[in-house]
Each structure stands twice: as structure tokens, then as C-alpha cells.
Length: 239
Image (cartoon, rainbow, N blue to C red; front, side, top):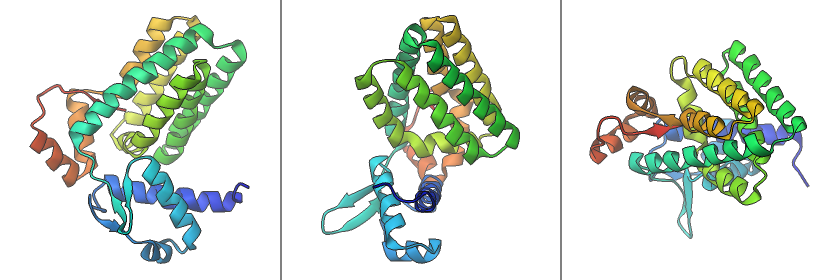
């Protein structure tokens, strides 16, 4: 049985705040996550906290060690780069197949999701835009007509959720993201698989200066990881 809507909302609020804390360095890699203080902090029962931590475990932000507890996962910049490079190709594959296979009704749904993104862009609410953006991408995944590809894409997307959400705080990123969404939709409507794949891939990748901006947002722990990795100029990273 699904939890009541207000319970789902509490879980989402706890998860989103913990994502922010982890990605922005307020909760450090390797730090133990205690349930009781979080119950007090968010004024919720144990269940929403446990469910939020379960979702964070799926996304790879926390790890549960038997007989030891729950800890903030250690995710370095090099690993994130590799994950985003793969994510860009998975998104491109989904868009390519969707351009070939999506029926009119499915395209209508994608257009509706684009309109929701446009509405949230006008509201200038990064979190609201993030959820509209999630729906937009999910509909394109489903339109590809390949359940295995959808499964693999969603699995990696879940691991990258907080970082995809964080990059929306980059200056003008929401407006740029919306423009990229429109380009993807134009390619889908034209039935152009290669144009759709190219637009989707570029939408996910962050290059050059945008990568440096992302690291700056990610906080000192991520910046230190990037420095230790000695990344060459122009390395790609993404959304």
C-alpha cells in the first residue's frame, strides 16, 4: 500500500534537504548519519527518515554498512565524470530511438512536460523546475520503446539525481536547460534521430568553464577531489 500523500511529501522534503547537505559538503563523506537527530531536525517520525535514507542509498549518496550504520558515501569527481559521460550516451540513445518510435500521443505528453518546464522557468523555482525536468526526461526514456535501456538509464539517473539538481543553481542554467529541451523536442517532432541524440547528449554534458562552475557549487570536498585528480583543461562533466 502506498503511503498517504502528506507522508510522501515529508519523505521528499527530508531527502531533498539531505541531498543538499551532502552535495554542498555540510555532511562530509564518511560521516555517520544518525536517524534520531534527523527526526528532531525535521520534526518527523522515524519512517520518513528511513525512507529518505533508503532513496539516498539507491542514488549512491549514502551507504549502509552491516552492524555499523549509515554513512555518507565517498564519491569523487573522477567517478562523477565517468558516470556523466555514460549518462550522456544513454540519454542520446533514448532520444534517438524516441525520434524513430514515439507515437503522436507520446509526443503530445512530451510537449506537455516541456510546457510544465516553461511554467516553472517563469517561476524561477529551481526545485520545482527540477521535478518538471525529471518528468520531461522520463517521458523521453519511455518513448524509446526499449525497456532494458530504460532500466539502465533510470538506474544511473537515480545515482546522479542530486548532482543534476545542484547544477540547476548555476547562473542562467534553468533558462539554458529549457532552450535545450526545446531543441530536443524539435528533433523528436521532426523525426530526426541523430539530431535528437545530439541535442540530448549536449544537454547532459558540462564542459570547460561550466565544469569549473559546477565544482565551485559542489563545495570544498568536491573541489579538493577535483584538484587531487589533476583533471586536464576541457574535461567533460555533465547534467
